[in-house]
Length: 328
Image (cartoon, rainbow, N blue to C red; front, side, top):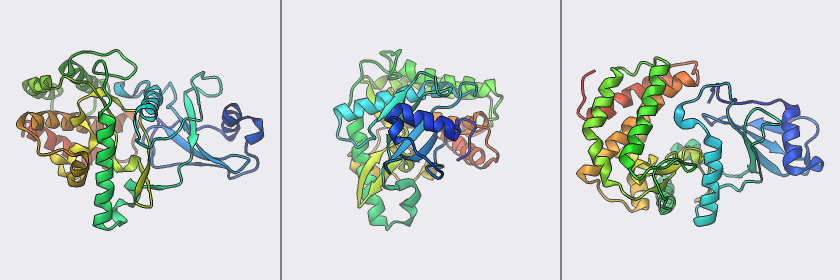
């Protein structure tokens, strides 16, 4: 996926990064040792073959001069903190971090190296799989997501702080940040921004039911799941994690917005039954949050076509309808 947030570097800089991480003796020589992994939407990632033949992945944060959405600021620090939590406190398979550099000495952004995972991306192969195999993976994703959500925080909000005891305050602030982002760049969301604010205010009381901060991955789509021989071998891309309500997780999105996929296998693996009326209201707010981001980010990332924008605008209409706003 093409995006102006992708901070591509020259071979000379990439070699310098490798030397800092692994030592001069492992710096690759010749040609063809680096290739960009193209399916990501935000950071640039390179698959690199070291001089001794070992393969690693280098992930580089966006350049500082590129404006990102408010919730994306400091995303790499969030990812590193999330990886440490998951490696230390769960059995969920996540990448090891070989080396991380936040000095901005070799390039203008943070970066880190991790081992290359030789596996298939579930988001790429899912449609080619028999239904039973696809469902089995869905159940595994649900089970892994539930394990992630067992980790408790001391407050709601970003892993790196600041936190708040009220999920209602945190989530409505998160959504307001997205609305401000859209207004700042004059993004057309198909309705007045204040209409969205009013709908959120009318339903925000449902958020008060959430009192225990839990680690939320929020970005656990199939495209961030690496699989091999019927098993999940790695879950990647953890830069959007925070402490919040587990019901906001990606796997629950299809319970109300069918275009995001059938959640049945995920729910079975997670062990979650039908949503209560209050949970349905919260889930509708979370769907609104996601679809707003998907519309507004297309401007920040300078998409060269309107495919995502058009698709996400339809989903935003569906999310507003769930909250009783069927006209624009």
